[in-house]
Length: 487
Ligand SMILES: Cc1cc2nc3c(=O)[nH]c(=O)nc-3n(C[C@H](O)[C@H](O)[C@H](O)COP(=O)(O)OP(=O)(O)OC[C@H]3O[C@@H](n4cnc5c(N)ncnc54)[C@H](O)[C@@H]3O)c2cc1C
Ligand SMILES: NC(=O)c1ccc[n+]([C@@H]2O[C@H](COP(=O)([O-])OP(=O)(O)OC[C@H]3O[C@@H](n4cnc5c(N)ncnc54)[C@H](O)[C@@H]3O)[C@@H](O)[C@H]2O)c1
Image 1 (cartoon, rainbow, N blue to C red):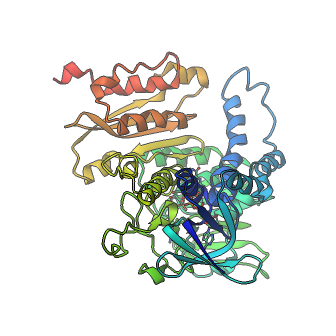
Image 2 (image 1 turned 120 degrees about the vertical axis):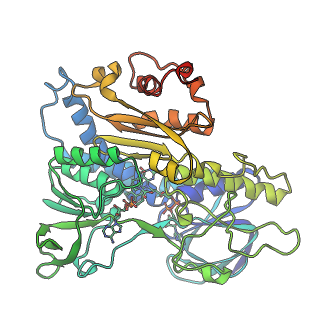
Image 3 (image 1 turned 30 degrees about the horizontal axis):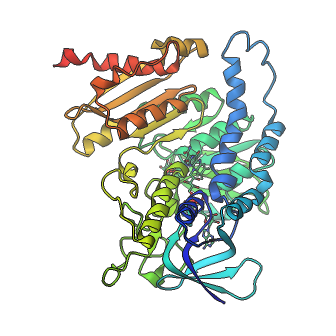
């Protein structure tokens, strides 16, 4: 069967849903193709279950840090109740709600595996078998197929049936011992969750933790994991992995220093790669296995421009672009992409200037990220090192949360600190990092300041209420110095 529609969206993760939503809002006829669950990785095996698994432990520890509440919160974490809440948060891996939402906004869902088949064509193999359906897009195809975990080519690892983030976020029981390979955000979060559940956790990071963030963030996460009882080995080089018995025995991980770590499960948390294999990208001149490069309106850049004035037709959005692999940033791209697809289809003006309606400018200036461990790490924009590497002359302002009364009221034993990275010439923020208990909500203030290019001297007039955590902003400005003192 061949069906002609306005827009075909390949993949109904958070990003595909939002591209479809915006294109539909422009009045276009939209079909979404999905071979697993509507809602994608984020809803079922990533953001939602991982944050739910972390939340119960962090709520308990937050109470235990406040005298008066601590005396009432003396029990152990209820792991079974935590796992049950996670099951509920992912609707027991049913996408009924997602399907209902698509129907409610008039987006057609086609269940099955989709692949590109030359210009504007997507072929769908139905999930339950049967005849293939060919979808021909009048205006656009948006590839929103997400990413897959990378399993390193380490001797014995694949044969040891390692966990990926899918197993760690959907497990119905907690292994007694969990080894975690990697020092990134999945490793930090899942190690914190499972250590909080009482598992004996060993993190094996080949360098430091959270490389790419400010050094003090990774250092605080290592200290936090150790405080939860986890073992963290930095600079670990793994030689081989072996699972004993017939595949059900313990896993041994041999390191180059001659030591061996044994565990019941091993979680591989060594990054992700774009899902561009088996989706026909080669039929439109793209490379299978690689991220799809796009311009700021999310048009795939390697496809030759269409003849004459014909508008571009191939878009890629979200994790598959490798641009800024977070749900919030993918959805931001998706709003721009869905709107620009609508504008181009209807012959309306395209607003593609810096911070225009139809571009994802903030992918290059202000991508917020939170590591939801204990402590939390929140960051946006550039680190001091990244700014310098980009040739921006910056000054840095640091302040500890122990200087903030609101932090002392929230909990005893205040730790953590924050940093602003300021473009010295333009006197605007280009980066910020917050580390501590409950700091996640502070990041958006910095995101607004960066995107708004608010002069630092004006930030002195944005007065944080007393006594809140936000007073860290005042401490940071004080560390930077009163504007007239620098004049
Ligand atoms: C453990 C973990 C925790 C995370 N936590 C956070 C967090 O707290 N906050 C955050 O912002 N980000 C988080 N992320 C990242 C976030 O999950 C991704 O950035 C987000 O899911 C990307 O959305 P997407 O729609 O691009 O891709 P996906 O969510 O991967 O969705 C892609 C969809 O396309 C479908 N699909 C793929 N190929 C085909 C095909 N050929 N035919 C039909 N359908 C297809 C898939 O089935 C899937 O439904 C986390 C990631 C992991 C691994
Ligand atoms: N809270 C959040 O927003 C959140 C949470 C989890 C994941 N995510 C997203 O998912 C992505 C993937 O997370 P991740 O932790 O898997 O990747 P990552 O890129 O954050 O970290 C990968 C880690 O694996 C290590 N590594 C890579 N190859 C290795 C190898 N061959 N041997 C040993 N170590 C190796 C790296 O040194 C690094 O420490 C993140 O980049 C992020 O975009 C976001």
